[in-house]
Length: 431
Length: 140
Image (cartoon, rainbow over the protein chains, first blue to last red):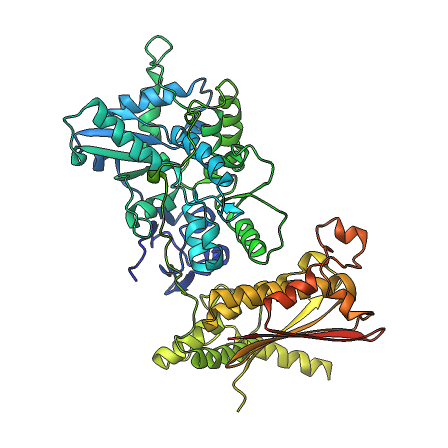
């Protein structure tokens, strides 16, 4: 299986090996080695939690650069609706959209516009006979990867519709060709402006056998000052009317937005990676009310909480509320007699289950290792201090047993000697 | 030599909010052993239902999961009030759960039937006033 490329970069000079990220990683993908944080690429789900939590700002999301767009003749911007929430006193989304043209894009296709189509088709999807419910939203790439690695039995529950970013990219390309028939596929470059490092990885890696139609992903952070400089020169007189989405599309930026757009009260919306994992565990156990739709966002607050956004997620959310207030409910509809979801909206192949946590390919061997792990764990201090470089004593026991069987080397708990000494002392004093 | 792997869990009857935790832990461990997702799902549902039952009816108990070469055995043991009529308890929809539990969405009378459905073998031994032991086996 090919290695999944990730989007987290470590600045070794800033990393002190302090164990903060170690303790926050939801998949236990991080170890401290030689004083620095190291990510196991196979386990990482790109949730961005380590970037969010690092007190030394040593972790950064790697995204594309605006310059990467220069090679294209016709440049299209795909702004995530979260972008609209980054500006103070923004009266009108059109300032942002016009600003994007000013910084050199030839066209802007709002992801929120595509989201409104996806919402409309989701309503149709949920009425389709034979679909597995609850349908789990396919919009958050972290959740999709998490399900692939940890909840394979829920694979069939994933909504089989492409996320709005992909639909936007496809529609934007089509529109460019209609406007400019002379353009070839290679002439057109599509740039997603993203709050989310997982989208960067998703575009790099594709989605199972689906190849993304986005060419470059830039972070909101990177584009922010450039954009705000152009927006300053805009006023009501020179502003073009460009907004093509409404409350529904823009609402996708925060948790619950996608769900409320299905017009059905049988939904659940959770945000924050730990919460999402708990919900998935519970769905797997069958312990949920009769739900039709489950929206899970790895970031707190939804996409507004993405680590590549500038603004505090809750302030961003509040701004979106006031921006949405004067928008039409939706600006994108299906035709009245549209009964089927077009083929182009579907993805069919989910990433194969990759049993990364498996101890060994041989079950008898795995069982032997598991017994060793249990034994070793019981002998450890159990305070999960992270001094050994693993997030907790249990993870250390796993690492140690795996290392032993791989290289024969013995890993030692750095605390154990001190701990045992203390314990002996306690016993002495009790006598 | 005994080649089985055993997982022991204390199911805390005092704290309803922690019910279901053992089933999450078992899931993680079974994944590491390379058990197939479908089997893991069955074990975790059976285990979850059993755990909930112990917390609702028996004030907690002990759960033991044994992974053997050809099967996974789950034993749930409590010292609760016992089941008066096992045949009746096995019927779908039959429940003696109190109202406050029902208001949480439990007590639909599907616990034991689900445990039976998702396992290959199930045996309940119970004595009123002494306690209940549920044995479940899932073949690999």
